[in-house]
Length: 153
Image (cartoon, rainbow, N blue to C red; front, side, top):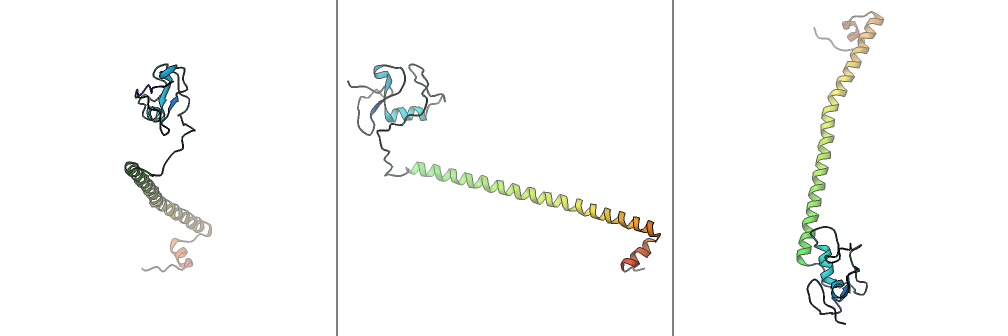
């Protein structure tokens, strides 16, 4: 029996684009499509749910015809190459921006934390100095002389 593709209504059944079953419950021509028509229907279905438009049975997986070997001797089409290059450029730009943001955060953290740490160290040293002055009952001038700090008067 000659089947007809229910998508394109063509009955040509060639080896590179055979008419195959859609694995749904439709009988006769309604359950038969060209391999390429079926792949395009699944790939470009605007609704998002992949189901038979006739019997509404969900297609469980994208169909791959195991009887057809994929011929990729031509390689990528120029439009596919362009899309690939544009996507790679976008990925590189996004990663570069991400690295720049991380670098900026590290620099900001350094700029913010260093003065805070320095202030804390100065405060601790001043507190130690005052405690030493109290314990040994010496003036600030005497403390500076003991430490060898040159005092210009």
